[in-house]
Image (cartoon, rainbow, N blue to C red; front, side):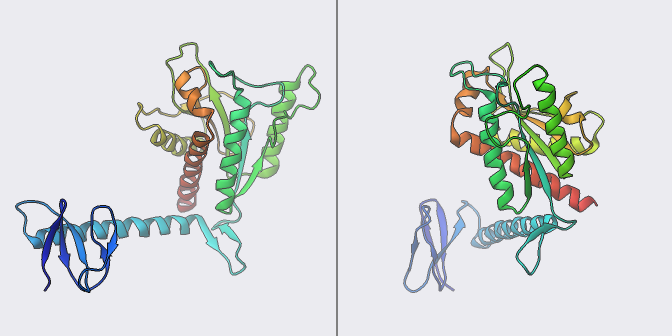
Length: 284
């Protein structure tokens, strides 16, 4: 039947195979068998401890199966290796706000341009989405704007070009990436906007906001806000504006100028998009 051994703060049960044997996760043969870890809880029987361990294992298996099911809902793989959604190819438009002579807001300390950060986050987000076999369309691919010549009316031409790209793509979702600014430098955090009369836009915004809140979980969570912005109103496709941080706040700025944090923001946005697509696919 084997025997028990207490190592550190855990109770281990000797069986006949190989498994990790200590709190650091090291693997080691033990007299031809192994000590299987069971959380040590004083005043409980071995049977209770084994039951507790099995319960945790079942929970982990359930979570893993749910994750697999989640991915199956979003994607199906054909015999030729191409991955598509269950309703056809998924397309997401990524819009890096501003560009060219329109740099957007600037960092309070470093004077970094919003347009530079927006494009960097979009490029990381594109890689994550493409790795999931999602078709990605960018409105802005480089540091330039979409207005042509920098003459009067450039902002209107720029926004109309973005609209045309979105309409031509027929996307499942549109994500416009921006950075925020406010006169009070104490304001910080991420904020997602959607068009007030768009239920599907609200659904996308809520998924995105939830992931951004998780990224900044040490702060008070924000709720989505409706907004009257051209990029949200110019088409009927589900669209959001993701304000990823406040460049008027020194702490947010310090994070947003690093590649590491930009990647984290992009991955949070990616998770939000995937969660939205999964919900959309399961409800159709």
